[in-house]
Amino acid sequence: MSNVTIYSTPTCHFCHAAKEFFTENKVAFTEHDVASDMDKRTEMIEMTGQMGVPVIKIDDDIIVGFDEDKIKELLKI
Image (tube, rainbow, N blue to C red; front, side, top):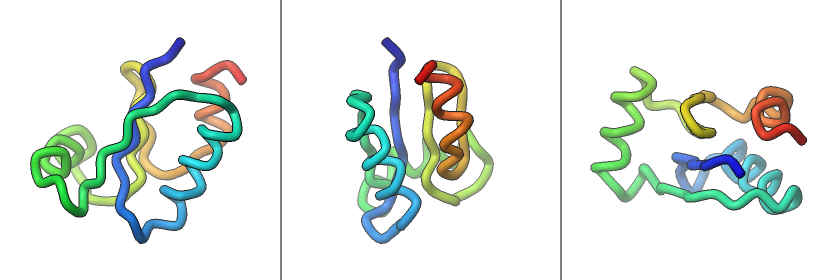
């Protein structure tokens, strides 16, 4: 089973879509709200070099944005 983390904000439409996708496909994930958690925001910026959300980390792979095809490929679903 993959280790999935999403860095998101409460007002981000694509963040909500990604979390709904994970829930519908029974994928466990850890969520970090980078609007309120400065440490996680800094961590996300250091990983990606930018502030766009969602940032989705699946094991060692990082996806910026909600790329459903890439997520399915990495999760093998």
